[in-house]
Length: 591
Image 1 (cartoon, rainbow, N blue to C red):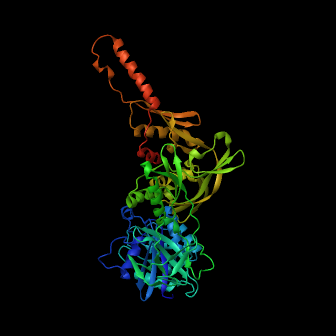
Image 2: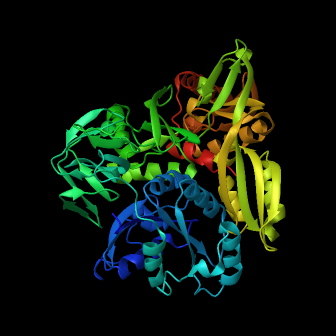
Image 3: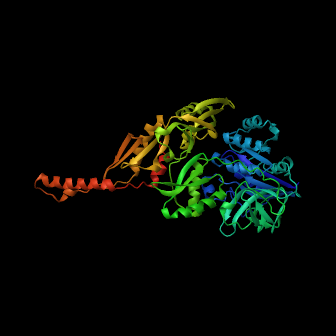
């Protein structure tokens, strides 16, 4: 056990975690030169295309007789649950900071997460080869943050490999070996899992006490199910089978589980004959921030979608779902996500990995509704709102947002936050050039496009992190969209009273461009209760019925036009309007 080191790499987005992991793999000869490529641990096509890490990736390296288990983590706030799970399986962390951008919001929140778990932190200053790098200024920021000495900071360029070798020695010297008792009953923590259609569920775990061998009888504590171990082994680029995974080590386990529901991330594995006395405190339950409905494009694919979501949840434990039905879209699922990027990635992965095409409704957040009878109802969907006469008041979730930016963008960022009903809590100058702002804001205001707007006005410099800090009363109204007089429940939203009129008007204008023309006029109306606040009309496609009249009395034309008018009227009474998927997505991009 003294020869094992478990560590992860944490940083803000695009500060060079995956590139540093590449260099460490090269230095320890874990991969042959032929297998080496940029961001080799990012094995999803989507990760390569977007240049971001979506999943944590565990890999084992050998260095000077030591076994180093490295976990590369994502940097985006929407995938922070991946980071918290990686941290739970480690004793130390490399904190990577970009020398051109300095300490960012996500750097701070990931660092606090690691400190809470008692991890040993090794600070690394990356990208020192860039022309715009300010290594001394950023080193001072790191010293302020960690209270360390400037000489403790490793100055490296992960791209060129300069300064990387000493990091491996520091990992061996500074990060403590895992603590645990090899002779105690088996106690192992599952921190990730994947579904393989041939082998069933493959769970990645870290052994805290005891050890596990092939052929052992094991029990999963949370579900109480018992299995025989078919295979255990270590995680390299591929799964390498072995006979045993010892105390303090990280590996994988296959027990032939075919049902995805039987494995929970954060569960404890123990021996059936000699169980451990208590389960490991797993990770805190994930709290979704953004909710959206997902419906199969063909109604008969509902059961298929259910099994796909079960398998998907194995690989992405921060994704939650429950069945719901909609008048317009039939049966589907109400899904919870950590943010809009997470929603986008989930939708894309369902299509690529499972060939499942889904319709996604307008994202919203969850509200607490207090009724006149004194009950409290959690409303995730506008259609679940009680009648206005029943409601005493509504409370919406608020977040504490932390924004770090250059001082020159101070004004526009404050205006953006005030427009989104934000309240300034504190401002703090980190250096003369950079300022940290703390705001209290409603979560519903940042769900749509706040992050995109923030990046635009700060030329990509501002970084943003947030956590939910309770519910507060709000003046909210339900905004319905009526198509041809029928409410389209998938497009209705709960919105603040002051923003309802402008949002309703924009919505109608946008839908007018997206809904195809029919044989009859389609009125598109935005309504609050019985009051219509905006209207647009999609004009009908008309056939020229008077074309055959040449000359003669005007009453002949009149008669034909009246006949057409009657037909249009009948058509409108029975006509239904199909809303294309692009209309649901366009609502997100209302500007």
